Image (tube, rainbow, N blue to C red; front, side, top):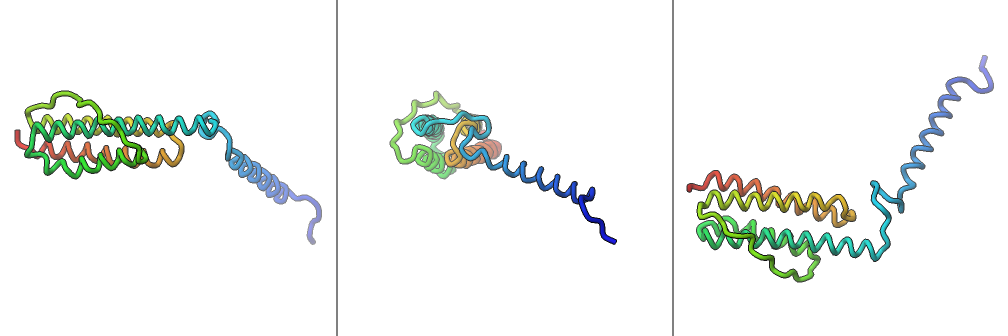
Length: 171
């Protein structure tokens, strides 16, 4: 004989379905909200923030490029090995600058006359560049954040390669 009416199983199933519906509805409401605790920006504010982040990222890249130039000038025999990394930094600058011309950065200072030390200094500059881009991710809009993440990963890879090159290079 079959029971009619509400059973405990049906009541729990209905309650679970309502809870799931509430959770799914709550997850979708943040389409135009603050998103991850960030304030809602007007379109003009978002454009200004994007330009400022891009300008800062391009400046950081220009500093790294100037450092590559100093190392290459001080150690011409390293130019061949550094050329692909330097070219990648130039492409990173072009990507974050969105085609806007950037003024050259001031040279970061004298470079060590010891080639392995100069390469280690360049690796440290690349780590700083990766850190700066990673920090900018926190305030960047999604499209720029993806670009900055890629550039930060590239800078981190350069730092690793330069550190390994410094280990292999005789003094």
